[in-house]
Amino acid sequence: MLIIAEGVRQVLVPFLIAGTAVLLVLLTVLIGQRLLRAAAEVRRTQVARRYRPHIDAALHGDAPIAGMVKIPIRHRGIAAGLLLSTLRLVRGSSTARAAEVAESLSLSSQWRADLNSRRWWHRSEAALALGLVHDRQSVPALIGLLEDEHEQVRAAAIDALGEIGDAAAVPALLAHMDEPTRLERTRAVQALRALGPPATGALIEYGEARPDARREVSDVLAQIGGAAAAVPLLSWSTSGNAETCAAVWRALARVGLDDRSYYHALKALNHESPAVRAAAARALTRSGREDAAPHLARRLDDEWEVAAQSARALAALGAPGLTALSQRAAAGPGLGHDLAQQMLWEQGPA
Image (cartoon, rainbow, N blue to C red; front, side, top):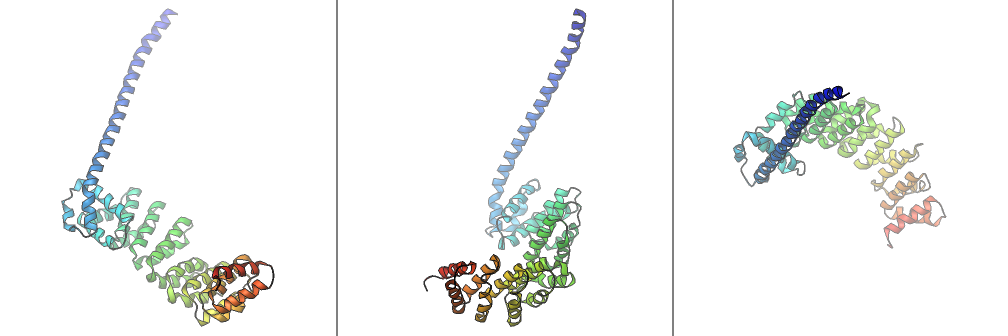
């Protein structure tokens, strides 16, 4: 037994010594890495503090942009971070100045090159950066990234195109309204809204060709379409399912009603779907037509949303609407009675 124990000791002791040495080396390396990272972060913070006033002054027009070229190449990554962090908080005139700063530091050209990087996170970050500086040169490349294999890159490209606001991106963004990924579809809608009126014509054409997409198109047109969207929206109000019709009337409520759409809104108050009736009542709120009062009054005891929208519309129609509310409030208990009293109370003693 003693011989065996001695043999084990002779094997185990060197093993423990070697293992301890390896652990000490690893611990030393780990501590060294932590110290190097801490030192690098301190250095980065110092450099950022040095350049922050220069970046801010250039963005606000208090310093010449040409002076940015004095920033060393090794520090331009930090300068880019400062520039983008400011743009995420501030828009407007600062964007044009930021684009000039990015060009003077050769950041824009680097970002454009990164759109073709093998690393997906480089492509994503570059797309977002180019969107923040409204770089129109990158629009074709960003449209190409809408087909990228990585979801985050596609999302970044959609956001960037919305930020840039180039109408050339409308067809590609419209195509992504059909994406099965709800996040991408939502981002595409937000980007189209950001494009504003230039997207109206393309949206209308898309809705005409794709009846199944009219609900989403109507929601976007409600935000950006204006009067130009009224005619096609009205033609869609009598076709499609109830959800589409309700979306159309919600959009017309934002766009406004003319004589023709007013007549159709009165008809929609009798639609079989409560959602459509409620949306039609909401649209009539902006009509200003006092002769809508008796039609709306008949809906004060409808389902909750319909009745609530009708009550709001009556309150907005002036004397005839208030008269209809007073009559319903005096007629007896029920949903219409409660809503009428609430609307009259909100109008005040007058």
